Length: 392
Image (cartoon, rainbow, N blue to C red; front, side, top):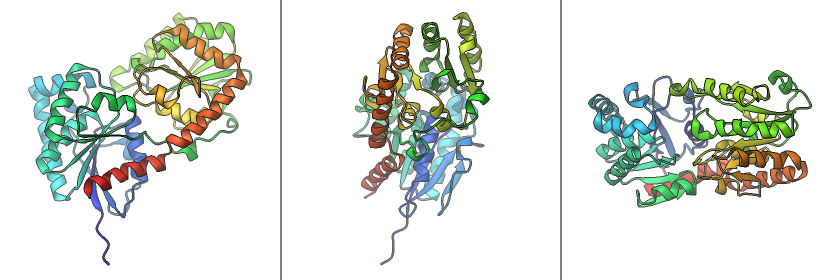
């Protein structure tokens, strides 16, 4: 009996640099059943997240997002840019027409859009090509302009939505006839409990006496770095050897934010206790070095670094808004705190620093939870099961 040809799935992502959405999409593509699905990747020129991605068994890539006038504005500018600015509206036409052509020429069976802007652009192209659409919703969208734009687009294309958490799903349930919650997957084989790597403390300028608190996140205001720095004096007063390791860098439009945070650390009198690493590739090793991870985000849609820390057996302190209560319930694998309250953030950190036994117990509970809910293989299979359901 002749085996059916794989169905072509078109993946649309406009980012040139690697972010959480692109990490998640890579993990899915690396686990794609290529006997059933052939990926067609619609991307921007020089997209870093595609580097070294296995593209075997007929996978295709196509540059369609070339005009940075449309792609560089921040999310809050999406709706005004598309609706009120003719230049940006014109810039949207070319990628939509190009995607429609590519979808038709390759016989795409399904479009899977990975970012907010791609939900709009790829959704329009898919509607024009007569191709069904999956929106992978990875954001909690609170701004009125983008929410209104999403609502109008959803009414036209009637997407199926994958939400990366219940918190995300709650804000989009009225946009689509079908909303599936599928958590982001983490390659758990890379995040294992174990001793800290030799020489890493020395490389970072840390001594054996230092107690390491870590935040792994893009430097952007909603991630809570400023509130964390305001919490740090209480922690350092109690534990002078505590050190905060800040892993991450800024968006291109917020390059000055690092200077603001470093100035804030000095103003708070804790400049000596903060290490700024910039972007790092060795997150699994860094997590083995720290005692805990802190992520005091406002309305975190998922929190990949929380799961990575949990998988490494580390307790966490997280802002209680958004998805954090589903990812790490308060008191189970760490503490949830008010993202806007430095005193409460400090209390969470101090509770873990003063009770290492309880912290270790929470770390073990977090690892069990990571294994149960966030395995990349299992969650990639759930996405592919959705494809099969939609196609058949």
